[in-house]
Length: 109
Image (tube, rainbow, N blue to C red):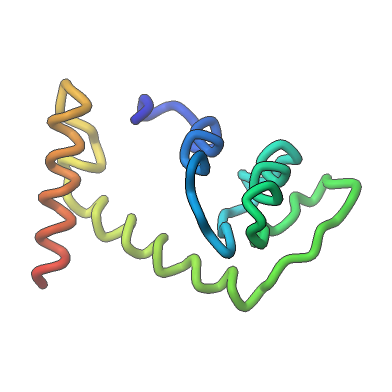
């Protein structure tokens, strides 16, 4: 876990470490050569739309990229829990515990 002001892409390499996947889906913020190299080394498909300023435009599977909205909607539902959205908890373990509680509540609906 990182601070609330820290960008997500700083943790991309740590998240991809020791993961087996056939494809990696992410938004434009993760369009960096070093992330693409790690995904290629995993022998996975890169499903990241290229940034508008990219010199070498890479193709990606637009149909598979549309599936990313399921994850985005799940995060949106979890953020309806005010305690998760505002990070009231002082410790990372207490915050993560409540994220689990929020996930369980959503799953039970």
